[in-house]
View 1 (cartoon, rainbow, N blue to C red):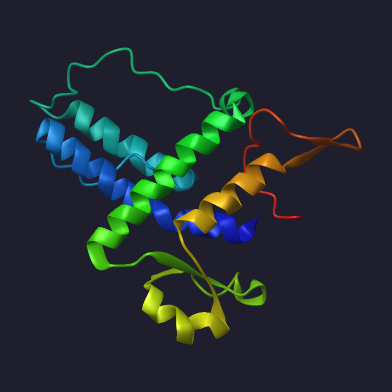
View 2 (view 1 turned 120 degrees about the horizontal axis):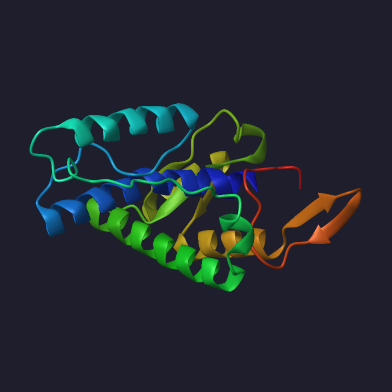
Length: 178
């Protein structure tokens, strides 16, 4: 659903920081950005950034050859749903733990359905929830994991005028017509 997608988008900057922290910890290299790409222009900017690093004298990547990209058209439809759910559960747990350690936030405040397109999802703390309830719903990590599991396990696809229950893989892109 759209609310699930917006909630997951809130995790992306934190995951990006966690990834950058791991790179520093294990390589000593400070990155200016992570590997999470949000849109086509982000990909173009990222490719330009990677090319600049490849061309830098003394760069660890300067002697790299045979760099390839892979098409995702076979990846998403072939992901076993049980494995995907397990990985996403772990990602959600790690992200919520990181955010709680960072500033005490343990929930996401999701705007009401009519406000979902214009109001942002934001992190909140349990004690903040009482007065925020009128503008949305606060969900914790377990709620978000249930939402993700529901969306994955109940995805339907239309092909040739027939509707099929997708039991293996996930569709590419987002279609919020539920």
